[in-house]
Image 1 (tube, one colour):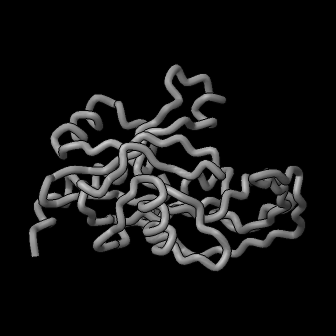
Image 2: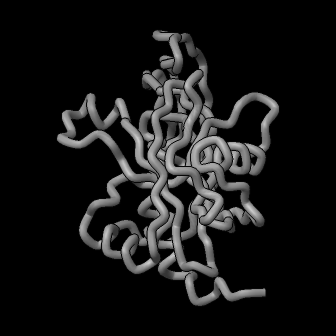
Length: 206
């Protein structure tokens, strides 16, 4: 092990000398040619990597504090189907893509209404993180959204985006069981529910 293994990360230099699109559809894939410094010194150059250009996205943990419920959505996911999942209908947090000139908080509010029929009373940023930085540029913004779960619709989504969404209002205890049983199997939802477990005691009435 390096004697400096526990040192704080340092900023190192890199450059992208070339990039071009190898696919352009609903999403894009670019090929990049990259040069960057090496930890042990020197530089590595001419490294080619394909990157899925996904952009920025938002997830919202919708919580009704009074009723101790989480509002979740269930929908078909093509990626899970492509991987051969026996059940590609995933239970998730509210989520959406950040469009040009949109702020992540605006997306959080809009998607909460479109997907679940719930307008957040309060929005609070929780985390920002890279979803799969080895092969995608996607940056994810996770929010806590306080709602009245009685507003939630049974179904949601936009026909224009081919969304078919079922809405669930789930008691805290039940969603914690789903987490421990592995029923929640996508990263943003696992992260959101773990955050709720750690912070539930702080979600007190004002």
